[in-house]
Length: 163
Image 1 (tube, rainbow, N blue to C red):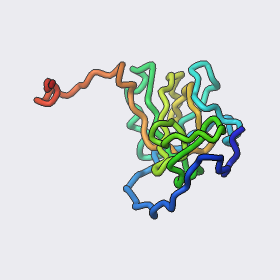
Image 2: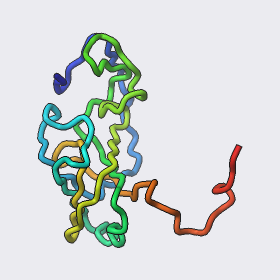
Image 3: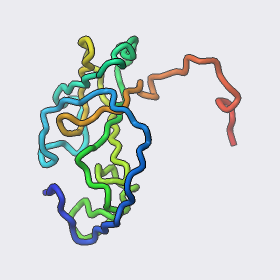
Protein backbone atom coordinates (compact mmCIF):
# COMPACT_ATOMS: atom_id res chain seq x y z
CA UNK A 1 0.00 0.00 0.00
CA UNK A 2 1.21 3.54 -0.77
CA UNK A 3 2.12 5.66 2.22
CA UNK A 4 2.18 9.45 2.27
CA UNK A 5 5.98 10.04 2.35
CA UNK A 6 7.40 6.54 2.15
CA UNK A 7 10.77 5.94 0.47
CA UNK A 8 10.80 2.38 -0.84
CA UNK A 9 13.71 0.10 -1.62
CA UNK A 10 15.35 1.16 -4.88
CA UNK A 11 13.89 4.68 -4.86
CA UNK A 12 16.19 7.67 -5.18
CA UNK A 13 15.62 11.11 -3.69
CA UNK A 14 17.43 14.20 -4.97
CA UNK A 15 17.77 17.66 -3.56
CA UNK A 16 15.28 19.46 -5.74
CA UNK A 17 16.07 23.02 -6.77
CA UNK A 18 13.85 25.76 -5.42
CA UNK A 19 10.95 26.22 -7.83
CA UNK A 20 10.90 29.22 -10.12
CA UNK A 21 7.47 30.73 -10.34
CA UNK A 22 6.25 29.95 -13.84
CA UNK A 23 3.42 32.44 -13.62
CA UNK A 24 0.71 29.77 -13.32
CA UNK A 25 -2.74 30.92 -12.29
CA UNK A 26 -5.22 28.57 -10.69
CA UNK A 27 -8.49 28.91 -12.60
CA UNK A 28 -10.48 26.96 -10.05
CA UNK A 29 -10.64 24.17 -7.52
CA UNK A 30 -11.47 20.50 -8.00
CA UNK A 31 -13.93 18.82 -5.64
CA UNK A 32 -13.67 15.02 -5.38
CA UNK A 33 -14.71 12.47 -2.73
CA UNK A 34 -11.06 11.71 -1.84
CA UNK A 35 -9.24 13.43 1.03
CA UNK A 36 -6.27 11.05 1.26
CA UNK A 37 -3.87 9.74 -1.34
CA UNK A 38 -4.46 6.31 0.16
CA UNK A 39 -8.11 6.47 -1.00
CA UNK A 40 -7.61 8.16 -4.37
CA UNK A 41 -7.78 5.92 -7.45
CA UNK A 42 -4.56 5.45 -9.39
CA UNK A 43 -6.38 6.18 -12.65
CA UNK A 44 -9.71 7.91 -13.08
CA UNK A 45 -12.65 5.88 -14.37
CA UNK A 46 -15.32 7.18 -16.73
CA UNK A 47 -17.89 5.34 -14.61
CA UNK A 48 -16.43 6.79 -11.40
CA UNK A 49 -18.06 9.38 -9.17
CA UNK A 50 -19.10 12.77 -10.48
CA UNK A 51 -16.49 15.38 -9.53
CA UNK A 52 -16.79 19.15 -9.68
CA UNK A 53 -14.51 21.68 -11.34
CA UNK A 54 -15.36 24.95 -9.57
CA UNK A 55 -14.22 27.80 -11.80
CA UNK A 56 -13.08 31.10 -10.28
CA UNK A 57 -13.91 34.54 -11.63
CA UNK A 58 -12.92 36.00 -14.07
CA UNK A 59 -12.60 32.66 -15.91
CA UNK A 60 -16.27 31.57 -15.76
CA UNK A 61 -17.08 33.16 -19.16
CA UNK A 62 -14.42 30.87 -20.64
CA UNK A 63 -16.83 27.92 -20.18
CA UNK A 64 -18.91 29.15 -23.13
CA UNK A 65 -19.37 26.34 -25.70
CA UNK A 66 -17.60 23.73 -23.53
CA UNK A 67 -20.78 21.64 -23.67
CA UNK A 68 -20.03 20.98 -27.36
CA UNK A 69 -17.57 18.28 -26.24
CA UNK A 70 -18.18 14.92 -24.56
CA UNK A 71 -14.58 14.47 -23.40
CA UNK A 72 -12.26 17.00 -21.81
CA UNK A 73 -8.66 17.10 -20.72
CA UNK A 74 -8.25 18.51 -17.21
CA UNK A 75 -4.88 19.75 -15.98
CA UNK A 76 -4.29 20.28 -12.28
CA UNK A 77 -1.55 21.02 -9.76
CA UNK A 78 -0.82 18.10 -7.42
CA UNK A 79 -0.09 20.49 -4.56
CA UNK A 80 0.56 17.84 -1.88
CA UNK A 81 2.94 15.70 -3.94
CA UNK A 82 6.63 15.25 -3.28
CA UNK A 83 8.91 16.77 -5.89
CA UNK A 84 12.23 15.14 -5.03
CA UNK A 85 12.14 11.53 -6.31
CA UNK A 86 13.83 10.61 -9.60
CA UNK A 87 13.49 6.81 -9.30
CA UNK A 88 10.38 5.12 -7.90
CA UNK A 89 9.38 1.57 -7.10
CA UNK A 90 5.67 1.49 -7.98
CA UNK A 91 5.34 -2.21 -7.15
CA UNK A 92 7.31 -1.77 -3.90
CA UNK A 93 9.54 -4.67 -4.96
CA UNK A 94 12.87 -2.82 -4.96
CA UNK A 95 12.82 -2.42 -8.75
CA UNK A 96 12.87 1.28 -9.55
CA UNK A 97 11.87 3.16 -12.70
CA UNK A 98 12.53 6.74 -13.75
CA UNK A 99 9.70 9.10 -12.90
CA UNK A 100 9.31 10.18 -16.54
CA UNK A 101 8.39 6.59 -17.44
CA UNK A 102 5.55 6.61 -14.89
CA UNK A 103 2.31 8.53 -14.41
CA UNK A 104 3.19 9.12 -10.77
CA UNK A 105 2.07 12.31 -9.01
CA UNK A 106 5.58 12.55 -7.54
CA UNK A 107 7.54 14.57 -10.10
CA UNK A 108 9.53 17.83 -10.35
CA UNK A 109 6.49 19.73 -11.62
CA UNK A 110 3.48 17.88 -10.21
CA UNK A 111 1.06 18.55 -13.04
CA UNK A 112 -1.76 16.03 -13.25
CA UNK A 113 -3.83 15.41 -16.34
CA UNK A 114 -6.96 13.34 -16.85
CA UNK A 115 -9.21 12.67 -19.81
CA UNK A 116 -12.70 12.98 -18.35
CA UNK A 117 -16.29 12.67 -19.52
CA UNK A 118 -18.37 15.84 -19.34
CA UNK A 119 -21.53 15.25 -17.30
CA UNK A 120 -22.85 18.81 -17.33
CA UNK A 121 -22.28 22.46 -16.53
CA UNK A 122 -24.06 24.25 -13.69
CA UNK A 123 -23.15 27.93 -13.70
CA UNK A 124 -19.47 28.16 -12.72
CA UNK A 125 -19.19 24.42 -12.06
CA UNK A 126 -18.26 21.72 -14.59
CA UNK A 127 -19.38 18.20 -13.64
CA UNK A 128 -17.12 15.39 -14.87
CA UNK A 129 -16.32 11.70 -14.37
CA UNK A 130 -12.82 10.24 -14.57
CA UNK A 131 -10.67 12.24 -12.16
CA UNK A 132 -7.99 10.79 -9.90
CA UNK A 133 -7.00 13.65 -7.59
CA UNK A 134 -7.58 14.81 -4.05
CA UNK A 135 -10.39 17.08 -2.99
CA UNK A 136 -9.49 20.79 -3.26
CA UNK A 137 -6.78 20.19 -5.87
CA UNK A 138 -5.95 23.45 -7.70
CA UNK A 139 -7.24 23.51 -11.29
CA UNK A 140 -4.84 24.73 -13.99
CA UNK A 141 -6.75 24.29 -17.26
CA UNK A 142 -9.58 22.59 -19.15
CA UNK A 143 -9.29 21.70 -22.84
CA UNK A 144 -11.45 19.77 -25.30
CA UNK A 145 -10.13 16.25 -25.82
CA UNK A 146 -7.77 16.56 -28.81
CA UNK A 147 -9.50 13.61 -30.50
CA UNK A 148 -12.78 15.56 -30.56
CA UNK A 149 -11.30 18.96 -31.40
CA UNK A 150 -10.76 20.31 -34.90
CA UNK A 151 -8.88 23.64 -35.00
CA UNK A 152 -11.19 26.56 -35.73
CA UNK A 153 -8.49 28.97 -36.88
CA UNK A 154 -7.27 29.01 -40.50
CA UNK A 155 -4.47 26.49 -41.21
CA UNK A 156 -0.85 27.58 -41.09
CA UNK A 157 2.18 26.10 -42.90
CA UNK A 158 3.31 23.85 -40.02
CA UNK A 159 -0.05 22.03 -40.11
CA UNK A 160 1.03 20.30 -43.31
CA UNK A 161 4.69 19.46 -42.53
CA UNK A 162 5.70 15.82 -42.65
CA UNK A 163 9.06 14.05 -42.71
